[in-house]
Image 1 (spheres, rainbow, N blue to C red):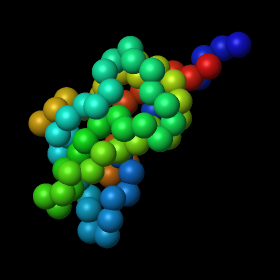
Image 2: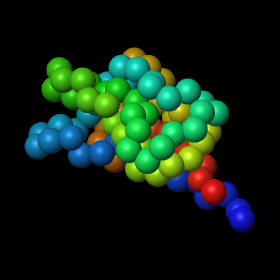
Image 3: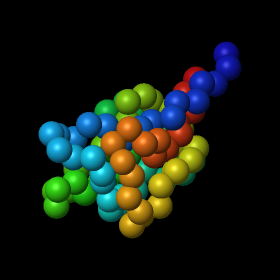
Length: 82
């Protein structure tokens, strides 16, 4: 069975929210994450929100560093699933 890579994007977090600040990575590179488990904490409109994984798999790349901004819809990580 071949692995599939999923590029996850910053989700819509509310009306008027266009940009987020990456506060903390909850999951480390090379770690397994379950679907629905927290991946990253972002700040939007001064509120911290934990973004869950849309798929189960191994986090193989963090595309945005802590302290950087990411727009809604921007890719923020890559997860590989079986």
